[in-house]
Length: 181
Image (cartoon, rainbow, N blue to C red; front, side):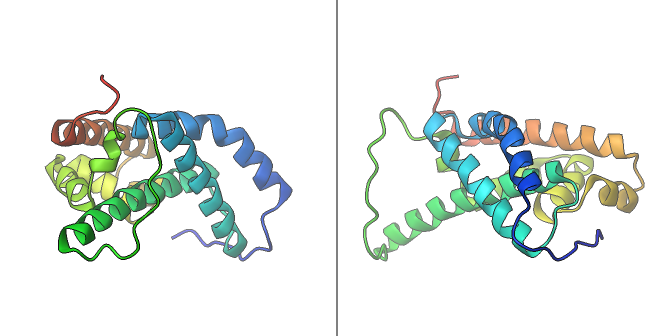
């Protein structure tokens, strides 16, 4: 496990690094969300999450940190929509959310529940699933995963990339796409 040092509020260099990483985050968010406004909101959530976390502990590998934050924020958004839908079905919606008018169809990811994501992960071949779960759900670094599974670090990265592409295909098959592709 990587030891994280306690820190004061985020340093200026972290803010600069986040600013530099924003275009790549936005590109990833656009692939997930298929709606530009939702993608910008997801990136905002990721940056906010990262800055809050950085107040408590210093990120080791910022790229891995941001990837984990993107995954956590994306899954939280999916889960929140699923919880609201389940509560509405039970008649337990509480105060009605303020509707936001958006042209066109909802983004595809908004129809993905936590159960959908878990079922899709379960469909992955074991080598891909193991790497994805360790990185995406348990937030282990590539090096930690490589040591745990006895793999070269590069193989971890390749398997993680393949797992993500396969998950995307599985989820598109399950819920479709909102962007017409």
